[in-house]
Amino acid sequence: MVIVLGVESTAHTFGIGIVSDEPRILADSRFNYVPARGGIHPREAADSFIKNAPSVLREALSQAGLSIDSIDVVAVALGPGLGPCLRVGATIARALSIYYSKPLTPVNHAVAHIEIGRMLTDARDPLVVYISGGNTVITAKQGGRYRVFGETLDIALGNFMDALVRELGLAPPYVVGGIHAIDRCSEGGRYVELPYVVKGQDTSYSGLLTAALRAYRSGVRVEDICFSAREVAYSSLVEVAERGLAQLGKTEILLVGGVAASRYLVEKFKALAEYRGVELYVVPPRYAVDNGVMIAWTGMLMFKYGVTIEPENAVVKQRWRLDAVDIYW
Ligand SMILES: Nc1ncnc2c1ncn2[C@@H]1O[C@H](COP(=O)(O)OP(=O)(O)OP(=O)(O)O)[C@@H](O)[C@H]1O
Ligand SMILES: [Mg+2]
Image (tube, helix red, strand yellow):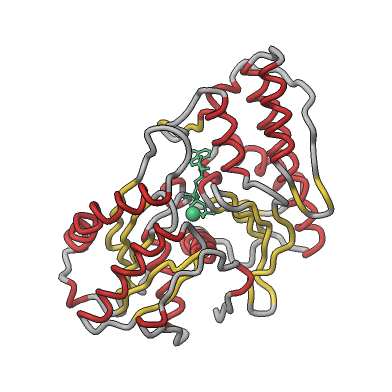
């Protein structure tokens, strides 16, 4: 049996997960940085990771009932993400690897969001819709890589939703009890026209954000703005996903990334799946958002295919694209 310990620290979550190759999740320990107001402050987030990392590591080992000696491989998310945050995880992973003489495996955070979705669902060869705070990507595996068939031209879907509710004075926190502030605020909303943008296979949300905030300032009801902005943003995503399906002839859709935890978005994709007669799979909400387990599991796959890195070469890559990673499985 192989046991991998994975370190996640790309943005707002410092997480350590431990998995075995059965596959089984042995531990899942997390610390979440929540800014007092506004968006993520990278240096503040990194400082909070440094303070909390020892207890997250201790908690993970205790959940697994293992000592560090029983860990076979250390995996770390080297990117993409925020430099100061990434450096905390990379430093800890390099130190563990060197001090305890464990092989080190580099993991791309975006690949990990997808692989945890594949591990926890029955999806085999899906069209992947990866939607999070930092990404909006339609992708599928082809020729040894996750190829990108559509993405946002500007801000990500999660970032769009977060920025909107923040500017409307409804957040942070953005998600309470598994429900995003935009969903709470949309109740009783009616549709008002906002710009719907799809260019080729790509979506765009920054013009929508500007228009929604302008409508708010001109007196449109806040519930109408939330409802309409969400409707437009989700519909444009479903449109490009549907085109991806048709183009690639896929019979499965897999939703991954933090926004996949949105029940309302899942409903929209259910309707699309029924209409096109394809299977819909959704990563469980707990593993939709950032976590160490997805890094450990992807590290396991990388390790099984012989991918390791010398600690001195394990530098962070803030802009490491999904489609730059060779996928051997
Ligand atoms: N229940 C929910 N409904 C809607 N959105 C949600 C929900 N839970 C989390 N999100 C959104 O998911 C995003 C965070 O997702 P995740 O942790 O995967 O992203 P990230 O790490 O910020 O970005 P990336 O993974 O691309 O680097 C935030 O925008 C958050 O508002
Ligand atoms: Mg993420």
